[in-house]
Image (tube, rainbow, N blue to C red):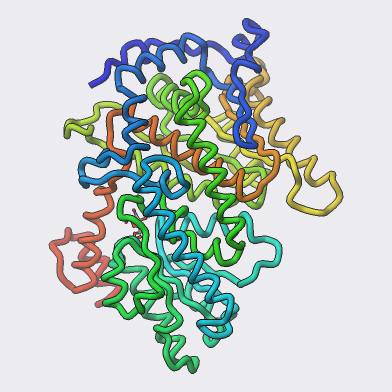
Length: 496
Ligand code: F6P
């Protein structure tokens, strides 16, 4: 296990002092990559800190592991798999890139056929999936599909029937295409929702509802067995993890609703970030620096959470997307060699939309006893057409929050009105929000998660932690299971 003593010995120098001590701090601690400005000058990262992290990265063979990722080596060792989401955007092992491009070509051909009416008069796309099979496409369509899109898209994940019923009220069954998104094609919620959509279509007069289904999956045989014709199965490689899968056929609703050009731009933006991550020296490498900052706060200041606040409505789903990406990837307790990890792993990711959250949770961020490192994300080009004072108010609020959290305001005579300050934040400012910058933004977070995982010595690509709950839920649904007194009582109250 790597030696963390040098990192643990890092000091917290007050942010205002870091600026006072180094007139070049802003230029040293900011960068522009793929249409995004990154500013981590208001964090406690220092030159010494970066050097210590670089030494840790060397000891952990970050460079070698990064190459192993792009080379398509088996780095998800607990599941004996390579990790090939970068190949979906054309970066990495050539054979895997060719496979991904073949699958993309198949998706594109099916989209063209649907557009030409091969499946009838489709106006609505109802996508059912959960976790990584829903959060990514939902984010893409919500962020980029706000102008009129070719199709109306609904993405349903929850097994709570209310989620589907809400869509049934506004969609026409005879004009609906069902996209069943599931890497495994066995997930209870998704398959139950898919069956219910089929029943709704049948009741709505669709003679052959399975003829209106597209399957997005790494388990094509299971999709065919369930009833989807092979020609409408859009596969992706099982080496693409669920929470890394929006680049694959799981991105189908975005590709069909936003158009293939937008989907290609998304992949290209991500590829640009891939190239930066692969080639830039660590002290200039934005995902690596973000991970070093994460690790400073989790390991040195023992911060248990991190907050992501998007000052742009179009990015309102990003915090939930990042929750899965970060917490399912790095919320682990064992190292790659099966030992207890012995230190905190992923921070708990939470957040929301600014300015709303300023009037809800920022009290704690300014004066509470927790230090929560924040990530502010804004967009220079407004997404609205209202008078420009809206956008100005939005962005100035974001900048002011970062400044106020850092500066604070002492008030020794009245602690209730004192602001401790020295609270860290990173700011990401996108030139514009389009498919390309969104692709780069998501890829940046993926690689940041990867660096965190490598330095912590954990496997970021499995998720065994979700299995026990699934097993017990299945047993409970069948009326069995070996439950405790409290759970048995709850089951009895609900089902008699
Ligand atoms: O239960 C967790 C999980 O396996 C996630 O990792 C995944 O994104 C989600 O469920 C959905 O899985 P699938 O795509 O196989 O339906």
